[in-house]
Length: 67
Image 1 (cartoon, rainbow, N blue to C red):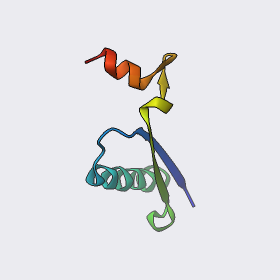
Image 2: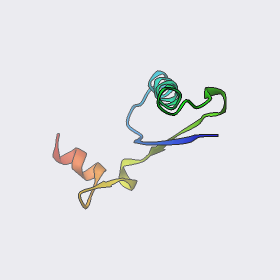
Image 3: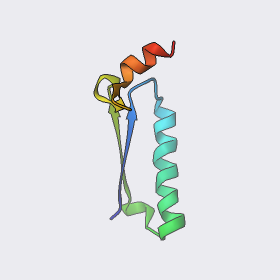
Image 4: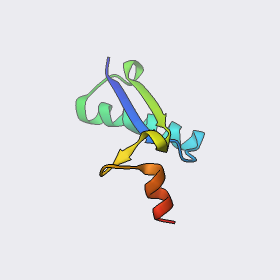
């Protein structure tokens, strides 16, 4: 039973985009590893940008710098 965990920042990701991620990730395991899609679990965790860091900086602050 494959388990896929996708972590993304919580920045305006639509329900449709999440559905496409789930479908695409499932299909990837079918295509590459010949896994059964009926038993493939996909979980999307949306993380607040205050709780996500890149290069030693908080993503919220990085987003402010780039605007």
